[in-house]
Length: 238
Image 1: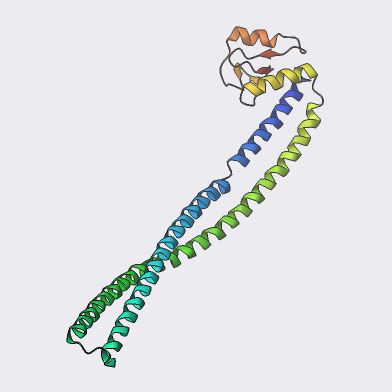
Image 2: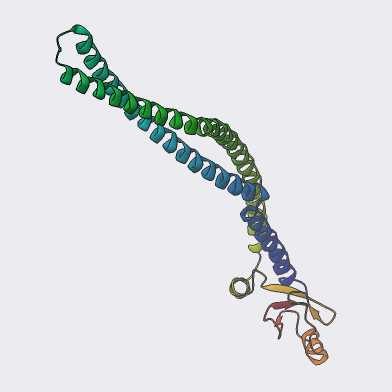
């Protein structure tokens, strides 16, 4: 058996090569690495946002305490000035004012202690945020590098696909329409392989052994007729 079945096998060879190229594009190791780094970058970015939110919350609480401290200090200063001015002479009033001054001093001390605790709580968060920002920047740079590698690898594969498609089209033009249609139908349902060579008593498509009577029958077929593998259904070129 020669033409057009040798041509059919050549078409199959090009189709297999094209399938392999497209599979390679889908499973580029650079693309897998890119997805991994993108996930790390997203996680680091989310962590940074959480840290920033915590720092902002602490800063807002510090500002609120500072306002309270300033308000208490101002009230305390006003009372102390009145006590020193001599405008208040009644012992009972002075005692009440002194009690309030002491109360305000205690409140101010409490607020200042709370503010100090917030500052101590914020310090490690600030350090973590700085570290996180550096990590996010490094991961972003790695993402860009990998995107460039993926784009370069995909472009090289696309170029090979275009060349292979051209070669395949030239060869496939020599196939009879009915044979081409049968081949395409089989290829679509059989994992991309619609034609295979009969090697000895084995189908090179499914690699199963055919019965000796079937092999003998196939080899006695006229050159213009083709057989199909009784195991997988592929066109057998013998």
